[in-house]
Amino acid sequence: MRAGNVVIRTVGANERAAWEPLWRGYLHFYNTDLPREIYDATWVRLNDPAEPMFALGAYAQGKLAGIVHYLFHRSCWTVGDYCYLQDLFVAEDARKLGIGRALIEAVYVEAKAAGASRVHWLTHESNATARTLYDTLAERPGFIQYRKLF
Image (tube, rainbow, N blue to C red; front, top):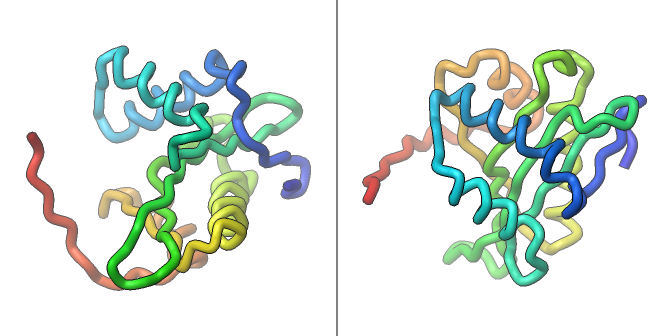
């Protein structure tokens, strides 16, 4: 898929060195530090055809400039799966080029092709810049997330 001068495609299994700084940047944005084993497990899952997890990359001038992770899961409300857009990050020097929008729209294409009935995601309420984009691409239904960590 092409969006202007940006090419959107699956992040290759041989591209961990390009993917990892973007993944680290995403985690840093949310003030999160994960152990190395999580990086390793995530990379394996993203590249395992038996897993319902995927990674798309946005390549600007041949360089990986943004990533999106998404996964498919069942729902009691539909026959088709839902698609959860889990992580979206664009390198600071590549922002304002439409990469975030292009990555989300690429997930929409993948979700439709897989027969998913919805794409959904979360962001922090303080992420005003991203929310400005998200408000143009999807509706915000007003649900509040609760969670218990173990």
